Image 1 (spheres, rainbow, N blue to C red):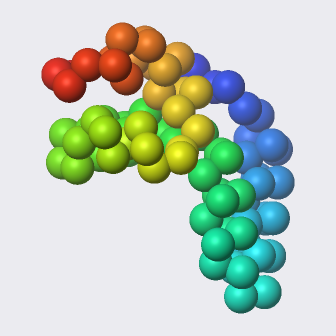
Image 2: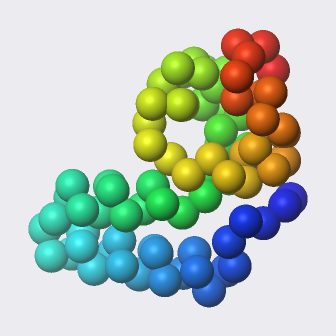
Length: 79
């Protein structure tokens, strides 16, 4: 799977998000955790089960999805 962010960068985001969650800042947690790339396999399930519009509006970092499946995958309703 193509990586757009190092594991250390992803870990730093996760640690920051966890700190926000434990501090009771659920909005901050949600905002920060979505900056980490969504794994392509999860995006595929979301697209199939919930829909492309939801996936695109959800605010997730889709850089690895685009790298794995291509930009067209994110602009078409079909898989």
